[in-house]
Amino acid sequence: MKTTESKAISKKIATNMTVSLVQNSERWFGVL
Image (cartoon, rainbow, N blue to C red):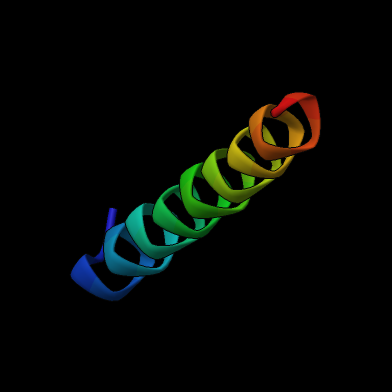
């Protein structure tokens, strides 16, 4: 695997994690 490919994949994973974290926090704040 090329370094550029792994970088793109890790960036995609980080983006997905950030999005899920934001959605979770929005859900929790909605409960509060």
